[in-house]
Length: 268
Image (cartoon, rainbow, N blue to C red; front, top):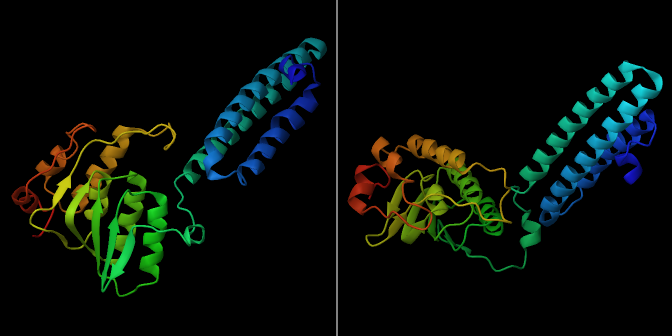
């Protein structure tokens, strides 16, 4: 490793083996890395890229000094750009894989808060990918389901969006009997008809990036704007959409039922 860092290897070997070859190998390894180790793979990939760039530049500079051939230096820089682009694509692909829900096969035998009763599927608890896997499996195997009953203090917004897609695909209604806070509200607003019990509560606040749970490249403001636009498309009034994320993550805005009806959030 230190020999490459000093640029001691011949330029052809450096370009073909330690630059392109190693980067391709890292891409192959990425395809078999478990999801829980993706962040480690990303950090390793970035460190290796830095090592590749420094050693390649030194090797190219030594090549020019020894031969006077500037074309070799230009070609080395071109391959450095190609490698950096490949590394970016690999990293983006690895991070996006963190949002892919696990197959239901890995969930068999687990007790998850998803159950059906008649034409209703009831979803309670934290919105994570395990719950989503059970939710999607339940919908796929129960074509008679017409409504989703939600009860959650929140969870991952990416999970809520995935649930919302399933709800809209099936044209399902949504209902809250007790409470539906934070990310849960995204899933609720996907309902064709949206209803709540008289004493039920719907709560909104800003999102928070939890270290170790979401990729650090996520822009919170951008994610909030995505859901504002989604809320507008679901028929909520402009005034309500403007206010929906004013509460800090440590607070919670719980509008009363009259405001929810007037703003188009619920029908009753």
